[in-house]
View 1 (cartoon, chains in turn brown, orange, green):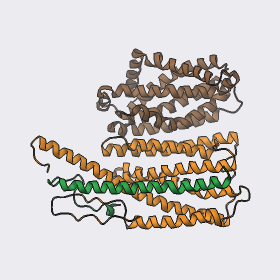
View 2 (cartoon, chains in turn cyan, blue, purple):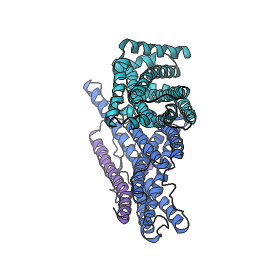
View 3 (cartoon, one colour):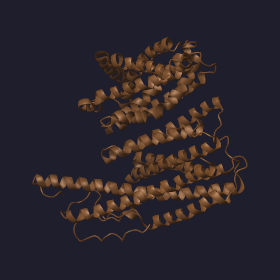
Length: 222
Length: 261
Length: 61
């Protein structure tokens, strides 16, 4: 199963490497969002530093939705998602493959956004372990939710608006927890962030399990 | 709520559906009961019960606010159970899909009512329309999650596909709400904000009685709405089937194949 | 907004919204039922609907 998952992930990531949509279009957009925040907060550096963790994850949300949309539009175009269905691969393997591919793209985006936040919002990294743990668990949780609703909305004509409506409430707790974990990691507060990482881990595990189980039935219905 | 005369009896000609409006003896009883109980509830809430020691008259909104959220949760629980029953092969019947659709929609309406009354109650007690406390925040997310569910139900698709998608969405929604609840509760402990929960009046005696009666009232009201919604879904399914059959007949007639057997 | 005004507003919403919702359903149900029954008059061609058979909708809840 993991071989099949790797197959799917590699296919998606190769497609992305060749088209470079995530790096050439989504990434600049995400960085621009950071700039827009600076305008919105009137370049108030104190405020931006305090809000930095939250703003980071809002930018991730924005970029992440685009990544998920794209991951499923390449399947839906020209009825190609039938190929996915008929490929004979295990649905759970396909879920994992999609999860990995979206996750990797998100991590790349997040790394770049982190640099942006550090530069633009004058934020300092105090706890890199916490930062990485929160980012990875948060990303897995986000990606899992994205894949579930992405496959549900395959072939749906209103996918561009339906997918965000379905995904955002589901990832709201992820954003909440990740921001709370980032605050001590970026030196904004002195609370413990590891509790929140534990919550993120549970959420990631739950959404991944849900996805493994529901991907098959949802794919058939597409 | 007068209902039209009973449907025409079936003709001797080939099979046909007998569609009836959604009202019936059962709904008329439920509806009548709702009206009476609502009148009593309003009387209790606005006139008969005393003002609260701490909150004053504001507590009168509690008799609307709390029952609406309890009814909403009850409806969503029913929707989840119905969705699970639909997905489980041994109990799969269209009936459960319709139950899920009806209860979820009514639940969403009551969630909206809860938010509205909550905001008004908050306006009087705290002076602001909104607080990011655990209960209100969770309720807001609950509302949006089920708006998403209703959107999925409306997607054009074959009935079986739509039902299955909706059922899966409903079950994921339940998991999501639990997660949201925990996260937001935890978050709230960091802030210790004034919340509706913290300022809930001590409910005893006639206030408790009135609250429970109000709960019963809104449950009856919700049941009336759910029955109607269920039957309306049934009618819409009939209409879709009818439309489909007609389209097939016309197509076959065009092709000169004669009538479908 | 004074206390009583807000309280009455809240109660009005809680009474009016379900009332309108219910009324909408009843009216829509009647319209659909009428459409379906009228539709059958033309459909005297022996087409068997997917559901099949005479059915009293109300008995099915």
